[in-house]
Length: 255
Ligand code: CA
Image (tube, rainbow, N blue to C red; front, side):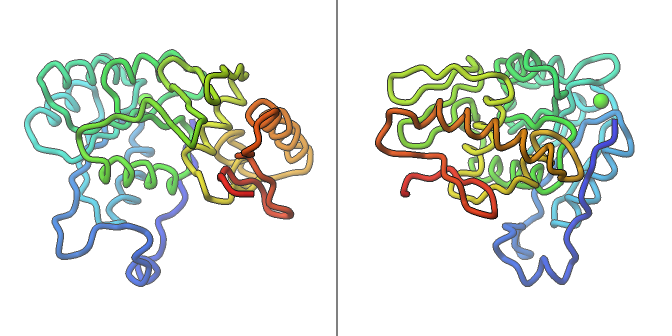
């Protein structure tokens, strides 16, 4: 499976852009362990993170990953679920059984909702669906490092809109909202990017996993957005999902 990892931004750009949230140079680089058997993917993630001032170790099997996670103090573990031998979820359970609270970001397969639920139950702090774009991985890693070791991401919220990632349920106030798998994914994306304008290109890339935006896909996206908006906002005075003309959509509270 090809993982479209976008190249890390250029060094010059990074240094002049504090909003990237890369660790300051006087601080110790956060230590990240990547457990991923696909070596090309592992190497691409490693290079991307190193380009953003992270210190990265690699393991290519579950056994090695477990050993390293237990023998060194990492700030974060990026753990692929599909590993030969011991799966990522088994490794995660074993790490948690040792009492280690290191934040773990699981990499799961696109069609395996069960893995995501099992993973969160086993103590994962967040997950990302393959294939993913590197900036999305970086954003998740930063969010987890900011949050620290205590809370995991099992509920996403905005105002009275609440998404339970383990139970796979959504409600607005007390009203349960019934979503298809795709709508759930879409809304999850908006909840993770709340207040940000989300373009159709971003949705094509991160939800539909298409590299090139084309007009039939734009139509599909729009149809899904209309349905999703109806389910989320219909009959409620505070609208949350808004169209940004010519650009895309945004999940925010004000009109
Ligand atoms: Ca794998």
